[in-house]
Image (cartoon, rainbow, N blue to C red; front, side, top):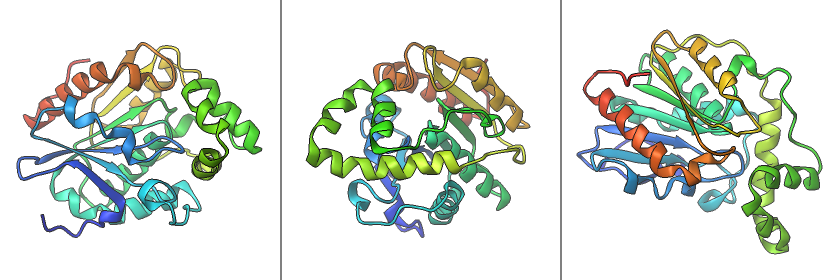
Length: 256
């Protein structure tokens, strides 16, 4: 398919001529596009499933890390500008929620806002003050990661794997800490929030603050689990997202 989209920045897990509606996924800190590799199996076949490739990991391992989260959003918005002729829904988890929101704002400034923004496991942009700073020594960063994702402990215990994965996590943690957020212009599209009921990073009440960042509808779904609830609850999350995308296609909004 011919498109001016910079393919360095996007991995197309499913994207063909039937896919006028495209779900563009933004990974959390330290992660890559492969986070969403299983999602097409849980989504309708006419929904495109794409994921953003951040620099410095996976198949962009040699690329330089961005200097600021806003600069990352600038680069992504420029690279994906050719996709805005389609019906786009942006989904971001944790750090990815902030990046997706910033990209949505840039698309809106250009006169082509997304059809919806889906944010997961992240405080809204205007409510980041007072949050815990997460960058520090490598050992402190590792301890923070393992505290809510025990499955990563084995990776950090292997010196070779640690050397591969830690730079991206370190760089992303600095991006998150340096991102001050603050007030942003309201979006003209609906916002859908998702979170785990036992997430130490954000409460459901804090997630409801995303309602203040749109002139359109807001709806929150709380699923069982912690910060990475979306692994164990992938089927439930994708079923809900499928409903959202189906309603967007026909111009309605999912009930709250």
